Length: 143
Image 1 (cartoon, rainbow, N blue to C red):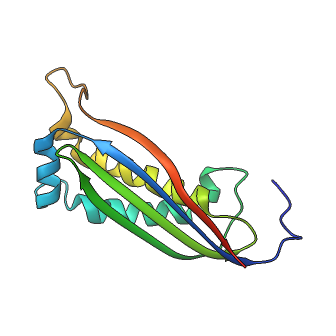
Image 2: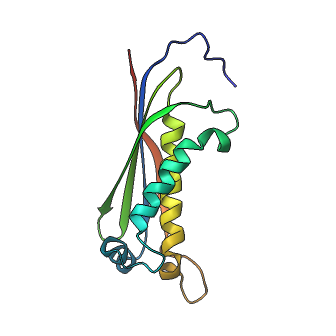
């Protein structure tokens, strides 16, 4: 683990995004709130926030950072995609980009878990479902 003890605490912000592709009819069900397991967007948002807070438990060399704010926003992308953007803020000695990335990834995995019934083909496979990318959009160090 890197020693950040000599660094001053400043406001840190990171934004990460990712997209999950699915059948258009499944995306329509998600947006209409008609998925059998429940409200996909609300559950995925809570999962993302929880994942942000648990990042040091998942990534062994990641510092435990006092998170002050998490924002999770979803938007449809075309007729077959759902984009998530996770913004994380903290007053800390090191950045929060890993937390934002983990939040975005877990949000997308939660969506997949909740829609998998609608995405499987006759053989039980997922030919349409894919997480295309998870990436950092922005990292800010104020001060």
